[in-house]
Image (cartoon, rainbow, N blue to C red; front, side, top):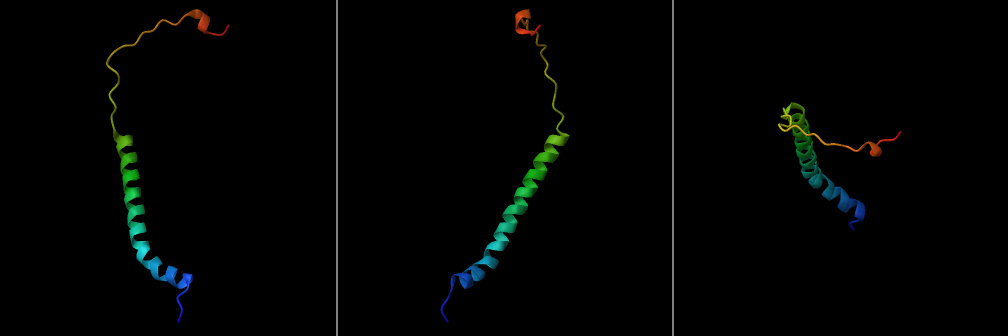
Length: 61
């Protein structure tokens, strides 16, 4: 029997599915963790007050 490209692909595919699923699952966990972190992070407001004078000619009339 002569191996063909299809038979080689069928022999490799089951071996490659498990690492692919692991990588996709890890990526999903990292993304979900990042979303949860940003959703629960209590960002402190800026402590210094910022005042800047803007010239009147910069505004449209």
